[in-house]
Image (tube, rainbow, N blue to C red; front, side, top):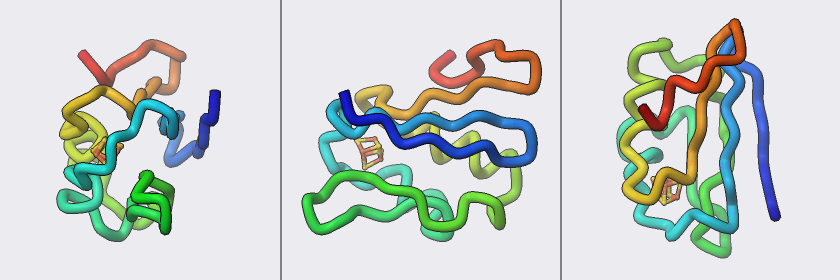
Length: 80
Ligand code: SF4
């Protein structure tokens, strides 16, 4: 399994790159945070600069739930 992970302001964000189908919804919502790589799979750009609400929205926008977010206490908040 190919997981890419970042901790941003206490949020742990995990991209399951095997799950990603490259629709780009995450990158559309937060282009500073995510982009599609040469294989049309999502990678992080600089999620640190995206406001928390929009970052969560971008993660939640994924139609195949390839992005999971855990809050400061380790509770999964995306997907809901
Ligand atoms: S929204 Fe999901 S499927 Fe689409 S590019 Fe982002 S991670 Fe991949």
